Every structure is written in structure tokens, then in C-alpha cells.
Amino acid sequence: MWRSRGSGEGGEGEGGGLKMDSSEKASATSSPRGRPPRGRPPKLQRTARNGVGKGAEKTPHMAALILARGGSKGIPLKNIKHLAGVPLIGWVLRAAQDAGVFQSIWVSTDHDEIEKVAKQCGAQVHRRSSEVSKDSSTSLDAITEFLSYHNEVDIIGNIQATSPCLHPADLQKVAEMIREDGYDSVFSVVRRHQFRWSEIQKGVSEVTEPLNLNPAKRPRRQDWDGELYENGSFYFAKRHLIEMGYLQGGKMAYYEMRAEHSVDIDVDIDWPIAEQRVLRYGYFGKEKLKEIKLLVCNIDGCLTNGHIYVSGNQEEIISYDVRDSIGINLLKKSDIEVRLISERSCSKQTLSSLKLDLRMEIGISNKLAVVDEWRKEMGLCWKEVAYLGNEVSDEECLKKAGMSGVPADACSVAQKAAGYICKSSGGRGAIREFAEHIFLLMEKVNSCQK
Ligand SMILES: CC(=O)N[C@H]1[C@H]([C@H](O)[C@H](O)CO)O[C@](OP(=O)(O)OC[C@H]2O[C@@H](n3ccc(N)nc3=O)[C@H](O)[C@@H]2O)(C(=O)O)C[C@@H]1O
Figure 1 (cartoon, rainbow, N blue to C red):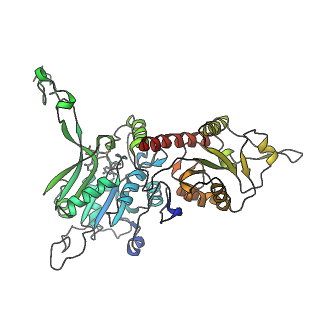
Figure 2: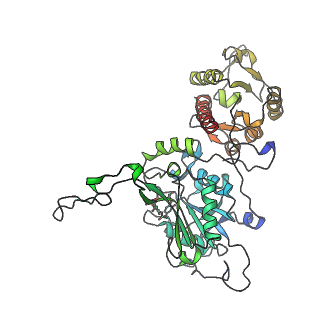
Figure 3: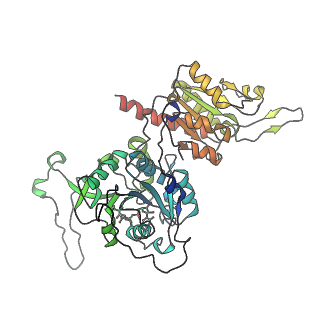
């Protein structure tokens, strides 16, 4: 959903890339389905690895594993539903990729669409069996199955997509705790200041009791350290523990996450709150965002819905959404110049009758060259350019721009190259929505600069 980046100008923007060696690439999907039926998964065996056994010098293989079954109950296909323009699994995948501590990064799923999105986000996919994809299946069941097909893995970092505010630094610290401090398992917690009370059970106890406070001396927040709660963001464990049926055990430690990064999507009403949280505190990639000064927008399929009506006297008739013209005006008021570009030789006369008063170039076969020229003319770097496109011809600009978006109905090449996928379609409010996204991220940039 975002691009792998190299160094230099082409590597600017919100995302990061996963480095895989060729053997890992060759097995981009692992699948119990692809194997001959032989009942239960093979019995797990402890091999001479991970510092155990003779001459084992190899760095232990730490795999990130995101469990993403298709049958989520409360929110349908929750694991790939777009949260702030990015599929839910995409947030934690981006953090895992940029952490640079994993030898491999996997999504375990039983669903075709989730497999597709996971691969677009740069993950390898384990097609899990239906036995570990039921409502009653636990995470441990799915992790155990994954390990039984991946003998090369020594340590599992089970990252839950339902905690999308994860940052690479959190994962780097946990990897260090396991690799250097010798912990067998580490899981995330958050500090909460919550007073707990015993439950009233009819017939047993008619009164409640304080569990962690003295009502006569109620502490103020600043006078009380609070308590640590498992927050469900991640669970790291060495293979032997999982083989024994534990995700937490052995030499065990917790990792305390910052409260603002601790988000747990459990029920549907958590979704809008999580969306606001990621926009403010989420991880947007290695490269720092810069203030946007120019937005370039493709015409057919972004400004318009792509339909053209031709009148008897060969005049083109197009439609656009008033919300988009409001979005354009808001951008202009915020000193963001908006320009239009088109591969097709649209009718300039028709476009100028929209009275948007925007500079535009039409009939452009190499959009990248034109936008590059525009940004140089304005003295901008690519990070200061936002691009909204929907077609294959927009791919390069989407990859280069500091902020990139596509309407909901953009082609898959463009979707893959963009950092933000609008809920609105082209010609139906996508520009307005993308403008809103730009404003939110600019707030983030400005608050970081203060
Ligand atoms: C490691 C673990 O035990 N995780 C469980 C967590 C954990 O205890 C809490 O988050 C702690 O705060 O709780 C559950 O959490 P939940 O059901 O939301 O699952 C978390 C993520 O894992 C995926 N998952 C879970 C189980 C499974 N067999 N396959 C999966 O793909 C879900 O799709 C989702 O993306 C729960 O609420 O019931 C179930 C999870 O199994």
C-alpha cells in the first residue's frame, strides 16, 4: 500500500521498505493447503539453533507475525478495513518493516483478500488452516501452526493489528530485550490509573469492596503510579515456549508502551477513536513529513468521475463535485497551490468553465517530468509535493510525492503506490477528503516543530 524506498530523493515520503533475501522471496506464501494432507501439523522439534547446540553462531531468526483472520465478528474484514486511509494491518506492517529487526515479516490468514492486501503491503503470507481460524481459535493456536511450517523461525513477534499506533522504536527495544538481555518472552503493557472495585454477586455479596484504593485516602493521579495492564499490542516469545503452549513464560518481561501509543480496537465504537489516535500519534514512515506547498491532481478519475459526455457539436461535458471545489479553495487559503494534470487532451475550454482558476497541463505522456519541472520552478523538494492520482500513469508521481493519495476507485497499481486511500471515489469528494488528510498531517508536522 506504500512503496519500498531506496535512498535519495526517490526515497522520500511516508513509508519504508522490507528487505527480504531471495530465499524468503521465493516462499512468499506458505500454506498448509499446499501440502499433502497428513492430519495434524507436524510435531514441533527443537533444533540446534538460537545459541543452543554445537557451533550455533547464526543470529536467531526473529519473525514478525500478524494474525489476520477473515472472520472478524464485530467489524467485517476488520483486519483490512481502512483506518485513516491505510488497511488496518498496514499500520503495524509499516512499523515492523522499518524496525529492521525481523528476518521475515508474515501475515497469517485464511482469506484471499487479506492475502492480497498483505502482499501489497510487503508481507509474506502464511495461508492458515480453517482449524485455527474459527471464532474459538486462540492466537496461540494460529502461532503454533505457523511455527510448525516454519522451522527456520526461532523467535516469534506476534504483533496485533488491532493496536495500530505501534512505532518501530518499540519493536527495536523488545528485540534487544530478547536478543541481548536474554528474555524468553516480552509483551506490551500500558500504565493506567484506574480504581478497581469487586463485583457484586447476588446472593454472595451485596456490597462492593475497593480493590486497589483506600476510599478514605483517594490518591490523586500524580500521587499514584497506577498499574500495568497488558495492552495487546505485541507478544514476543521464543520457539521453545510456544512449543510448550505458552506465549508468556520463562524469563519474562514486559515492555511499557507510551499511553498515547496504546490503542486497542476491540469493538466497533473503538474505530473512530483509533482513527484520530493514529492520525495524531501513529507511525507514518522513516522520513519526516514536511509542509505541503503544492498539490497536483489528475483530472480524469480524480477531479471528475472519468465520465465524458460529448454533445452533438463535439463539446465535452464533464461533472465534478462541489465538495471538491470547496476542498481546492481551502487548500489555496492554506497557501497550498493546486495544479491539474492529464494524460488525455481534455477540453481546456470545458475545464476553464469550471472556474477553478488552476494551472493545468493536458495531453501529458510523462507526468513525472512535468511535476518535477513544477516543483523545481517553485523551489520545492518532493516532500513538499502532494499528489492525487488514480491511474498507472500516476504511479511514479505517487511514489515520489511526500504525500500521496488515490480515490477509492483508483486502479490497483495506483492504490499500491499511494500512502492514503480515500473513502470517496473520483469526482465524488476525493479531493475534499484528501485535502482534509493533508490538513491533519500538517497539524502533526506543525505540532512536532513547536
Ligand atoms: C495473544 C492473544 O492472546 N491475543 C488475544 C487478544 C489479547 O488477549 C488482548 O488483545 C489483550 O488485550 O484478545 C483477543 O483479541 P482479538 O480477537 O481482537 O484478536 C487480535 C487480533 O488477532 C487476530 N486473530 C486472533 C485470534 C486468531 N485465532 N486469529 C486471528 O487472526 C484478530 O483478527 C485481531 O486482528 C480477544 O479480544 O478475544 C483474542 C486474541 O487471541
